[in-house]
Amino acid sequence: MRVRIHRGTKEIGGTCIELESGEARILLDLGLPLNGDPDEPALYPPIEGLNGGSDLLALILSHGHADHFGLAHLAGPHLPVALGAATHRILKAAAPFVPNPYLPKKAIEFTDGVPLEFGPFRVTPHLVDHSAYDAYALEVEADGQRLFYSGDIRAHGRKGALFERLIARPPRSVDVMLMEGSSFGRLDPTQVFPEESVVEQRFVDLFQDTDGLALVAASAQNIDRMVSLYRACKRTGRTLVIDLYSAEILRATGNPNIPQSGWSNIAVYIPHYQRVQIKRSARFDLLEQHKSQRIFADQLKALAPRAAILFRPAMLNDLDRAECLSGAKAIWSQWDGYLKQERGLTLLSSLADRNIPVDHAHTSGHASIIDLKRLAEAVAPKMLVPIHTYEPQQFPEHFKAVSLKNDGEWWKVPHDH
Ligand SMILES: [Zn+2]
Ligand SMILES: [Zn+2]
Image 1 (cartoon, protein in one colour):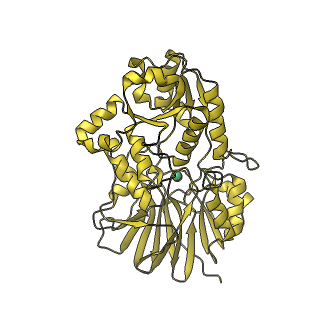
Image 2 (cartoon, protein in one colour):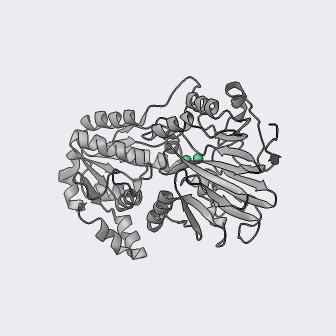
Image 3 (spheres, helix red, strand yellow):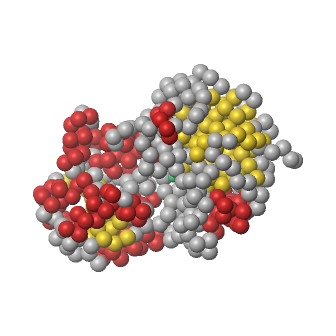
């Protein structure tokens, strides 16, 4: 088997791995570089046969984050695109609400542990804990060799048991592991990230310390975080107010244990910009789907001291008009790097104009270095290649059998049994 990492040997974002066995090839992920423009051809990796009908047999997506699928629109209508079944549903649910929706034209849905065959390649998805729902590590067998790609992975989320399962029963005889290293350069090697349950407790503490509406800026697609938010609301007697997009994402999980718009302490408020989106896309069925707990602007003021709203900067005008911001507090529940970018700075000044204080409650979607060491020791690959990291040169200090690669270069999976 031959391997070419198009992007990711020295950066986070834009992950794309091409594998070749004989004449056949497959791709693992086709991501957009961070802050990249999906319409910028200079960012497109030079991959032959994306239109299908050639020796490129499939694109397999590890999970639904744009840095892993954000260039998947380059795959033509004949190329099979394999992705998790829930990831596919979430992409469909998001489509009416996002500027450049992506839906694979020829989708193959997969589930945990069920292998897929593409010519000489056998690909087994392993469900993992990550901040994206339905995220997978991918095990690829071809030519009697085995490659294991961690995808994005962590051990401290609500599905940490999946990480423990993986290291208790790792894939055997792995020749090459491509392992993410997002935390290098962001976290001291001896430190750990807080568990998701700690974020829940932080929400509880902050809600108890807030007289008015709690404005929580979190990603609706971070389902672990949505669960933390819901549980913290329940523990503090607050109603969780979500928008139509979030209600649809939660529904798309297809998981009855995940909070849903019809639950009694959840309310659905549809901000002006979403009413415009619904009108434009004529998706009035979505209003019908989530109408049972719908509330309107004139109810927000009375509800505010007993509510937390999943907050988007674009709803600030709605909340102003509803006069529901007295005593409000904002809680930033995403990567704080976003707050240093232009849109984040604009949001901070909008909140400051309204005397709304900002607190933080977050944990990483990526494994600590301590957990990465546990993974590397369990899998014990013959060769470990850093990917999805800004600090590949730190790997040899922490792991055995590290081999540093460059973007765009082909290399062989070694035969040294
Ligand atoms: Zn991710
Ligand atoms: Zn990623």
